[in-house]
Length: 260
Image (tube, rainbow, N blue to C red; front, side, top):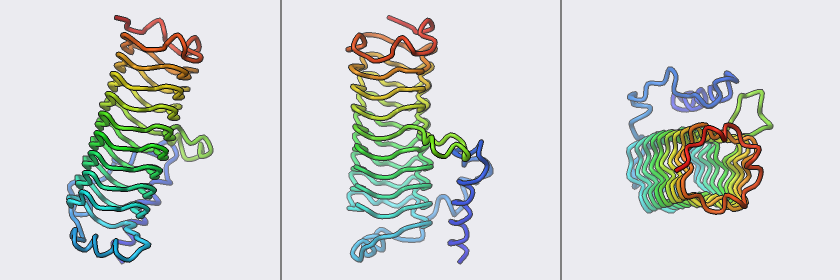
């Protein structure tokens, strides 16, 4: 009962305080057992997978090694997966809304069509992961997505829930080198100080995105929509197809771009 109430409290907190809709870190003790311990073993997780539907809502799974497991369609709503290893795991269509994945390792994982709304993923590792067609509105500050794919994914702000505050993806100071973002919705996403070196943003939307201080070296911008994007102090070097981008003239602070 205590664990159930705890998960419910976390869920309610995510819906409270409109201006703080995505700031779940305040007042949370990340060293507490609730955030670092696991109430199940890998073997118990595997047993649960054998009897679908699989629902890990509110479960404490932090620190486990769940690498390579097929967790497709599983529900991890408000679950704690901090520092959990999910290397090469299959999480296609999984529900990770409001989940905690701080410093989780999802290297090479498949999250096609997964839902990651209001998820906390600071410093998570998703190098080579596939998040194509996923719905993401998570805090990925300091995360690594080197060579990952978000092709066709929706990381943009949810404009239907303004009463809750701006729900969007935060990729501040993230390593996004060689990211495949073709056709992705990155509208109003926070990309400040991130590295997008050699990323492919073909036909992606950067409407209203924050790119201050970002490294845009070698990025492919064919058909990319810059309407309202803030480029203050962004490094723009050797871009590909910038002449074929959309609304570049409507981007903010173009005069502050650092061109090399």
